[in-house]
Amino acid sequence: MDGDIGLWCELAPAGRTSRPALFLDRDGVIIADTGYVGRAEDLRMLEGVAAAIGRCNALEVPVVVVTNQSGIARSLYDWDGFHAVQAEVAAHLAAAGAHLDAVLACAYHGDGRGPLQVGNHPWRKPNPGMLLAAARGMNLDLARSWIVGDRAHDLAAGAAAGLCGGTLVAADEREQQTALALANSRFIVEIAASSAAAIAAVADCGRCAP
Image 1: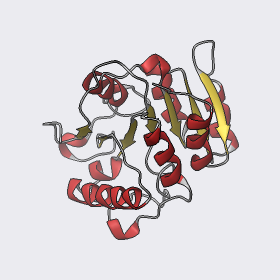
Image 2: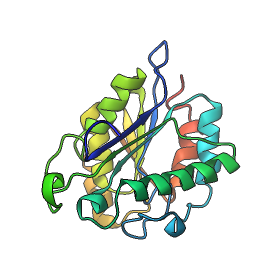
Image 3: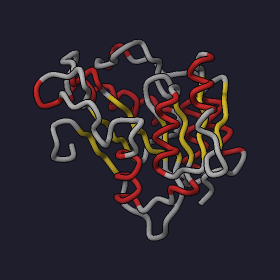
Image 4: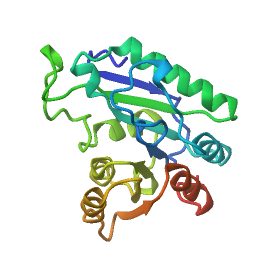
């Protein structure tokens, strides 16, 4: 935890030189989004994702998860449940020779309960707070970094953080149009059929190369 009841922050040590990173949403990108996944037994890894992350690991591209977790604010599960799911994700990745370099999560939400009822927390996507915190803690070069998400607000967070681009995966037409509207001379927007393909493309195209 980050000393804040609504935030989770696990970071690998900072590198000596600034390097780009691959940012990933979790639900809908790494695991199936079945709705407020707060138990390890409910986790389902998406096909091909572990191997694709492993390819980025082999290229020494830091892989950073940035995830909104409003289920905690809504009291549907707690940080222990979140940790259990993350441990299961890590086990699945390890079985494929892959790993995550950082995990950041924001539980705050406008429909939350008690102190977690915060509608526009700086860490909650589409705000860029999680990406900025990872950059500060790990010495990341955001201007050469990329994000993969299944919602337009994932890419909006990337654009706000100054990333060079992002890929939207497995989204409906409305989400695609919202994401494509974020594109400009400083931020590239791409659409992919699956997160495995999107992550593999980051490795194959040399994006985020150290």
